Length: 188
Length: 219
Image (cartoon, rainbow over all chains, first blue to last red; front, side, top):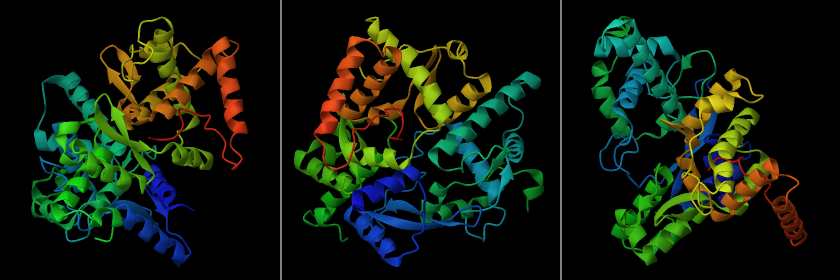
């Protein structure tokens, strides 16, 4: 199999199964190096090991949250705040690794946001409109790969893209853990 | 770094190339030539193209700016494998969006024939509902398509999303050909398309066949 095809497949599928044959894994690593990329080992929410295509370890695109190069710089404030709430809800213990975290419900995420921002606007219609916008942000985050695909059960899980975040990015989150939007029962 | 194509460059230029490649792969809209040194300078841009090619990607010129997309042969192989293919119902809904927002307006002369896909006449959700697809199917498909940047919602309705910037010229032509075959299968244009494809298929003895599906693989 050609190296470009193997890497393109990884991009198209976002995660691929770990090859049984170690030589296949080595071939993927070699192909990644030729493209200044690297193979990242991740474990999804179901505990299944998979591979993702990341960037060369020597290359630092800057913090994912950075204003210069962060790919979240074009995300709306709502999307970013919703991501923060999803992280907190899916990451109950900051001493543990961020990814894969645990499952939360959409309602938990929305409740955490409402607790964080307080009521927006007045009346039930306003609140419902805000919830719809935030639900839209959850869908947008799924599209980015920051949240796992919708399983149809109103469940929120962190997506494989989060597994590619650098240690400095995760440390930044860990240092601000208590500032992340949380439901009341999570507050320590 | 053991990437041969980069090793001939000074460290600073390597960083320029990687920065541009990263941005090309991540951006939602075309990058201006002037936004990155490695896009502005032809020699560095060539290195960017080599780096992309190593991952099955190509540099696409989009109205004077740039984005990355899949190499045509690579995408044909991925489509054959079913990798990155949209769900059946998503393809159906996307086809409707493309027919109503692009193909029909182009046929009516309301959009220039050489306009990009994103220059479209938005189609209302109500128009999509007036089809054989259920409302739930359409709603869920549109959610997925919008999340993926394949369809974009504007005030007036729905239209192709920014992912359409990432189609190569060949992929774009193939997709529009599919719309013609669907909308007017007995017409002269459709005949011409089928003749052209038969001629190409005969020219390829290596076992690969011409890519048929245009709204399949993720870009």
